[in-house]
Image (cartoon, helix red, strand yellow):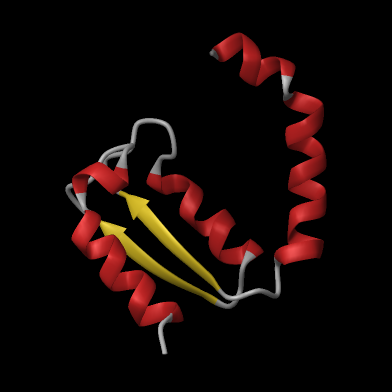
Length: 84
């Protein structure tokens, strides 16, 4: 997988440029596994800056597969953010 990530550099650079312009004003729910080994918490400031209208839910005991580690908290956060 590291080779594929490195090979995707042009795509990832384009996304880093285009996503904020296209989606930056949309409401966002950021769910962050605080023990994630791939998407480390140090990435949170960049996400917060990219999506000003965000709600951040930190999942302190959750790793990379947040849907397996905290399904109830995820469902609750989605309802809180986007439910009517």
